[in-house]
Length: 330
Image (cartoon, rainbow, N blue to C red):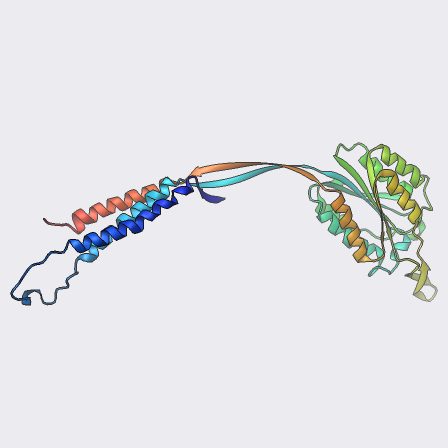
């Protein structure tokens, strides 16, 4: 809500106030006459201006009334701007690897926890989109279908855990197929899959290249992220004497991830630490922007009658004071 004037250019009328004050001052001085008395003893103790304050008060009330009338002429209005926003949103499926290799400690405290933090930030930035979550290891698990309840989606992301050893593996093709199945019937302006993996496809019945060609046919872009340092990474390993940290080879299939992205018109990113992972998600967010159309309505409520009523009240008060309270005799 804002207060505005329909005719702000009339503010120049306030220049009449100092002019009226100057005229009043000059006129008041000329009103004094001169009388000669042989003695002033009868007037001792009487101020020469003892009644002038009444006259000045009436003039001040009149100036306030004139100011209120000027404000009324400027037509003050209360304006409420209403916006109708239509967003052409994007449907995004996040596909996250939860295989055993996500325990690697090249991200702090490990890859999965770092991915969860960055993914939640990414989700929070996509307020006008529908998003879903699919996780995978040897098998694919749909955690959350496409939804606009992004707070709930972030709860699902926060609850992701690394899969049990008997389900360990990396079925990239199956994971993509599950996400495509959720997006293929979508009528959104843009359909996107963000795939994060730290290994190479070694399970499942579907080849990731064939699956990416299917995604292309459905108009789905795939952005792929290879997570992990280059070379080796520290990994907690269960041994007969307890958990020990060992260096294991990082085996990100960058060639396949790059082909998946190229086939669908997406892009491949390599994230070697949490900062670069955050930059990757931010870059994807900037590439997939939501389009908005905004229509604005402004409601007006007239307020001019408030200063007008004030001016009327001041003029009535001046009349009462002049004719009754400060009554003048000729």
